[in-house]
Length: 329
Image 1 (cartoon, rainbow, N blue to C red):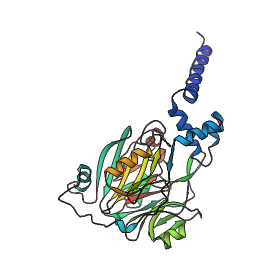
Image 2 (cartoon, one colour):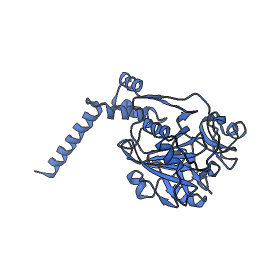
Image 3 (tube, helix red, strand yellow):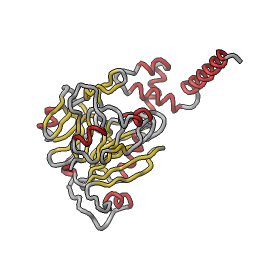
Image 4 (tube, rainbow, N blue to C red):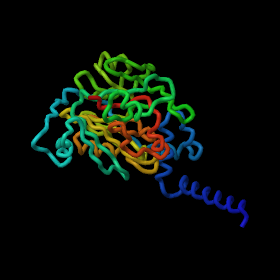
């Protein structure tokens, strides 16, 4: 058989597989394509390439989340992170039982969604701060470089950045606050995630000036959605964003901060938004927010890449990003 004939057969098979996934009886791929495209600002056209308005509206009506329209009540958080001698349940015990010789943090390896996850408990919320690239507007910086340069021991990626030709530009979406100062302000009002000067996690829709002066934030980035606010989980219907590598930050009522990271490959495996909410709820999160995920998903511990990002990012020790959160003693 000629090589050209084999190539044509392979292309025909791939086309049939693509047609089956796009229009066949299995709804997962169709739901994933439509919801992913329609939840972006610039790629909604991808949904319209394959489906008409009626199909898109039908998919979106069955797969969505309801944004929590409520600001955090910081009075709910009473910081008391001293070691305890009794626990409410096994999840509480995992958090509160310290790793011998380490009173700063504890890493709990777990299963989340259909992949591996990591929950980091940080006992002193005053040590959780924004980390950022040295100069915004350039190509970006990896967390594995950013974290030790900022003096971080454990770090995760934070807010989103503008992509240019598939690469992180180092231009953040929304405000960035660091050590009580606005270090980036693009004038955008959106979901701000940060810690106030009382070391309490605040989730609020805000611009830079209000975040600093009205909400008293010291360290913050913009992203979302908010997953849990004042103990109330976000309502998720269907599977609006599918499985993917994900990152979240949370705080318990006792003040302990949680970093949650899920491994996976984009749109193939990892965690759903509901998976993230369920794990954080089990471990006592009172307020929690989704951070940038996908190829940006990064957990650095003592200068080393701890998680397993998607293939390309894994080979380069993480993707270029603009901001993150770190445990900085």
